[in-house]
Image 1: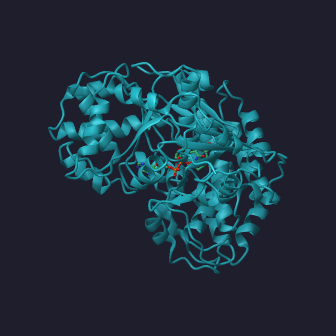
Image 2: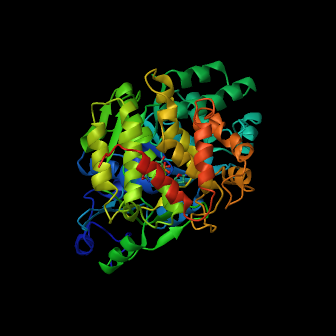
Image 3: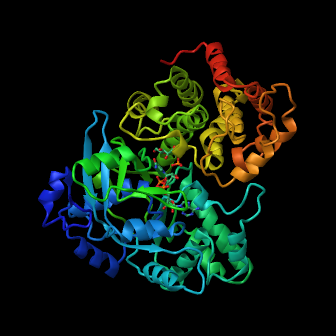
Amino acid sequence: MVKITDDYKKDKQAFAKAGIKVPTYSQEEIAKKTLAAPRWVHFGGGNLFRAFHAAIASHLIDAGKLDEGIIVVDTHDDSIIENVYKKFNNRMLRVITKADGSQDRELFAPVADAIYTGPVTDDTSSLEKLKDIFNQASLQLATFSITEKGYALKDAEGNFFAPVAHDIENEPAKPQNNMSLLVTLLLSRFKNGATPIALLSTDNFSENGDKLKDSVLTIAKAWQKNGFVDQDFIDYLSDDSKVSFPLSMIDRITPNPSETVSESLKKDGFEDADLIHTESHTTIAAFTNTEEAHYLVVEDKFPNGRPAFEDDGVIMTDRDTVNLADQMKVTACLNPLHTALAIYGTILDFKSISSEVQDPDMKRLILQIGYGEDLPVVQDPKVLSPRDFIDELVNKRLPNPYIPDTPQRIAADTSQKVGIRYGVTIQHYVDDPKRNPADLNFIPLVIATWLRYLMGINDEGEKFQPSPDPLWDDLHAQVADIKFGDANQDVHDAIKGILSNKSIFGNDLYVVGLGDKIESDFKEMLAGKGTIRKTLQKHLDEESKNFD
Ligand SMILES: NC(=O)c1ccc[n+]([C@@H]2O[C@H](COP(=O)([O-])OP(=O)(O)OC[C@H]3O[C@@H](n4cnc5c(N)ncnc54)[C@H](O)[C@@H]3O)[C@@H](O)[C@H]2O)c1
Ligand SMILES: O=P(O)(O)OC[C@@H](O)[C@@H](O)[C@H](O)[C@H](O)CO
């Protein structure tokens, strides 16, 4: 058996026997250079980072195009740092699960250090360590994959979360929230030479860089108001030749590590293949499993320089192009289809995405959303063709039975995603004088099905385990008294608060003419067992367009 911590240069053959390609560089040398002159920090060392960002760094180092690796920071989950990074000597094994059943296995070791900094208490040592890193002129960029909720400062009612409110009232010495922590680090950099830096969000948002900038400036301006920072610091953060917030589009379906892949690794002699379920709901392992297809499009705005990302396939381009590529993926050609499969898949009890898309109703649903409702309002980013992209997704990527993805993974944090995944398309229908949001059928149906999901009762009338969501308690409480088995009850008062909440959908859905439609679909799905599928089939039968 080979362990991930074994000497991959000396025991190359043992890794090769387990089908694992190893780096040619010395991990120790790279770590030494990285710690001496940090160049790249990454926040959120979860599965996507391990499958994508770490691979880019490792490939560039291997090719002699990068001399320093990455320092990983997690502000949310200390167990990721302790039980995955430190335990496995900051290494990761990436497994690409191909459609023919074969796997590409590759070991990466570009991470020089992994630091946990949660809410800062009397022990400020990790904060001080991070400040030292941020004070160095060599630092060119920080990247982020911290989930959509990692950027949020306010709750659904528009009030600051308690840790954010605490940070705003107190000086930046002991930040409780991760965005305040970031601003604390930037303040330290500002005071120690004010060298430029790029802050690159790689989360699934339209205009993700703008969202990051907004969160950073909201905290900084609140601190200015409270006398903790000066206008000079706000100017530093606002000047994109000093601090830039490039936009990005990132795409690589990276499911949680799966038992099947774990077993295949063990069978082939790889020892560290157990899954780790952390208390903060991350499933992680020494290995990460991902798909072959991948796209990363980044706005080329790095005021302190950057690694040669383009040499490992990253598309470096201008802001408008990234924005269009991102809108294409996140709001139209991939993620809205994913969230529809997540909601229906959970409530109809599918265990995998690949099996779900074999179901004709599910397949027709995503074709109607993707080709019928989203594609007509998508602008072509030119660097990728929207039609080719969606064709590849529905014909090759989603049906790949070796991608161990589940509706339950994708259903996590749906409240944070619906505004992006459906709200932007709804807005396009609002803005276009030739279109009317009321012409949409399947997007409102998915939203109605999400309301049914929020009741916590599946299509068999049984309770199911919902995926974690920061707004679950609040949203579930709003629909909890609605009776299952009665399609004639008045549901308006119970659901109007959700459907009119602009912080969830970006619009009041009643004002744009969708509220009544959603209410009517939702009521049909209250009639009894099997009505979620029946309502979907009714809509599919009524819709004459065939996108097969
Ligand atoms: N997995 C994918 O297929 C994929 C593909 C493209 C983009 N993304 C983006 O990357 C994000 C992360 O995906 P992943 O697969 O790495 O997830 P993951 O669950 O494996 O890891 C999530 C990471 O974010 C951190 N995190 C979670 N909540 C946080 C919070 N409130 N504040 C700060 N940090 C927080 C966790 O500690 C962990 O490091 C997604 O939410 C999405 O925006 C994922
Ligand atoms: O990662 P999330 O939670 O934003 O969304 C779940 C999936 O839709 C997402 O991870 C996709 O797999 C990814 O966007 C594909 O590139």
